[in-house]
Image (cartoon, rainbow, N blue to C red; front, side, top):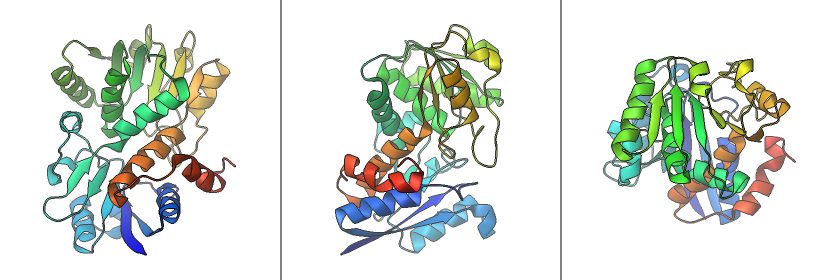
Length: 280
């Protein structure tokens, strides 16, 4: 039986369901998968040291999550021009030489959105958070036909860097930085949370109560818990919602393809992991 060793590097990942997804995908494909969670601070190492240890110890690949999706980029060979423009990677593949980088948040969001909303265009979007996952989703929104994106981040320079990258890749796209979250929400049809707000260990929400009225849909990149305060408030206001679980699932399908070299049956995988995710 083929065996592959995988892992996830990130902070606050104790509740991550990534190990369950990849082990289940391996079982469906006849591959023995080991999957380790690596928190640099807990290990007494910095990110660079953890990454290099994984490479030296024979890992096939790594998932990279908050807050390391951007700082990993210089360590990777990135073939896809769109991923180079995004400037963030959540997947690293060790296959000899310089590790290869990919962004399955980007491809996974497109699959998740199509599954939830079909061919309906995203419209005008207000996004909270311009970090790694926000960058991946912003570029996906362009491909999905969004008409405008306004980003608010407490780190204004981070939001500005995202908009500059987006403008460089899609000069005609209407993309702006907002000085406040309320300003970002003006005329928005969709509200997207790409911050850790609402995650286990963080809590809260990035959007004020005044943000929901008149909007059409909402998405939360957080998936632990699946029902975040932001999504619950969105549903109470009558918005259609897409949970971070869908992004987690589809980015995982895409990442497993890279790690294993072939596809897993997505329907079978969803059924296999439902009891663990609490969706059964």
